[in-house]
Amino acid sequence: MTGISTSCLGDRPLEDALEILSGMTDFVEIMDDGPHYCQSAEIPARFSFRYSLHAPSRGVNIASNLEPIRRASVEVISVALGIAGELNANVVIHPGYCAWAGGRALSLQALHHSLDEIRGVAADSGVTFYVENMPKWPYFFFCTPDDYQYFNDGAICLDVGHAFLSGKLDSFLRLPFAHCHIHDNCGTKDSHSPLGSGNIDWKNVLGTLKEKNVEPILEVRSLDAVGTSFALLKSYGFE
View 1: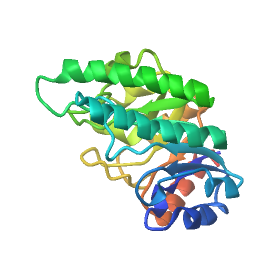
View 2: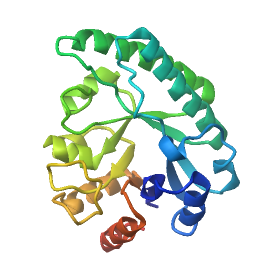
View 3: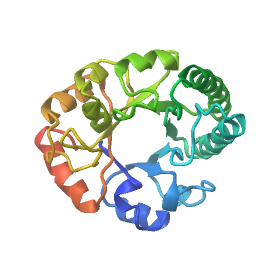
View 4: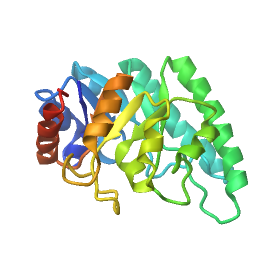
């Protein structure tokens, strides 16, 4: 079953978004940020979905070498892990970034410290978390397959659109990912477009997902894009 991210209904309250998606899938990833930020499991628990949570990312940097910011970022993600534990869900996190030239070594130390703390909270919550690859943004970690080494062979979420923007999609597909975001683009902008509207070879990508038995999460910007994408998925044998 293909899951759907609530990002396609980012202009609606979370409860409304989940109500709309209830007729379309049984697997939902909550974009746990902005209008869909979860302060508790109360609203998601009203529905019978299988869930994953995309932890807050816009104001979070687990690789910050400013210790108060790093600690706060881990705390925010820890809240998401606790809620995910109540929902029997997994969690996707962003890998953090280095904001200053020459500061990458210190940021990498901060990243490793944060990951150690997050692993502890995840274990206590009974939750699996995945680190998501980023587009070709030089200040972020995990923009290339080589950056996988920084995550100590941890679980990863392959974002296909991001990998395509990096120019390394084929190499990313060879990594041992167990969670996946799918959306399309033309190779220049992280547009989160409907499948088939950009330049990604979906026959190859979806074939790999079938081989790895990974259920993808459709992460597009509108309900219309969901419908268009589902038509392409169905043509390749995905429901």
